[in-house]
Structure formats: structure tokens, C-alpha cells
Length: 170
Ligand code: ZN
Image (cartoon, rainbow, N blue to C red; front, side, top):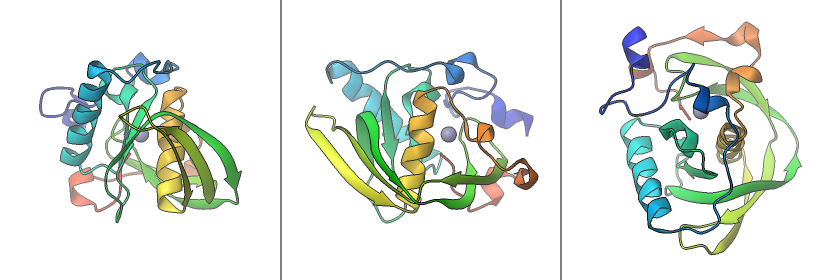
């Protein structure tokens, strides 16, 4: 799977062990033209990679911006996302666009409330359950320099070619 770990124009997502993935991202003070362009690029890269979520550090930018596109939901950008409520627990498989080919089970909260701002700078809040809640928790972890392999049940870790699997990656 070594070629999947090369970063180039076709595969622009930052991969481990790039240190940017372990740094804490900074809050966005104003959603300006640069942030808007970054959001467009994140949405484009996420879609092209068949991802259901992406965090700005995965494009090498240490800003608190995530994009998510869980199945059945239109793609959405969240600026300065903050999980303000958590409830319950659920275990499911996760993968990550920054760790291509590796999958494993991660325990997450079942329900969350996430607050933040949209790309126009308007305050937004969502109550989420199940997969969308999982994606947001995975992406917000990226903003803290935390990866799913830090939380995974190591007994369930396994390699699978991302293009031969239907599994979701974030
Ligand atoms: Zn990820």
C-alpha cells in the first residue's frame, strides 16, 4: 500500500507520519476568502476520495475547519466546531484518509450536539446520532492532533485496500 501514502496532486491528503497531523489547529477568527477557498478544496478532495469527512489539517492547514458528508446528508462545512453535549456509546469500524488501508473498531458517543459556524460565519448547531455523530467526533479529534488509531480497539485493526472496500473513510 506504499503508493497510497505518497502525497501528490492526485492524492493531496496528508498521510501519517506527517507531524502536522499531530498538531492542534487554531480557531478561525473570521471566515474570509482564504477560508472559503479552503472549504471548497476540502469538499472537492473529500468527494474525490469518496470520504465522508475531512479536517483542514489533513490538507496541511492548521485551522479549525471540518467538512462532513455522511450518507444521506448534503456535504457540510463546520468552522470552529465544538461538541457541547455527548450521550451514550457505540462501537463501529473507522478508517482515515490520512492512514489509507487501515481499519478498526472505535468506540464513540452515540449522540452529540455540535456547535460552530457555517462558511458565511453564521452560528449553527446540530444534534446528531449514529454515523454523522461518529464522523464529527473523528474530525474534531483531527483538530486536536488525535487520530483514530489512538482510540481503536487494536485487536480489530486490519488492512484492506481502500478501493476494494466500500468502507467509509474520514
Ligand atoms: Zn481521519
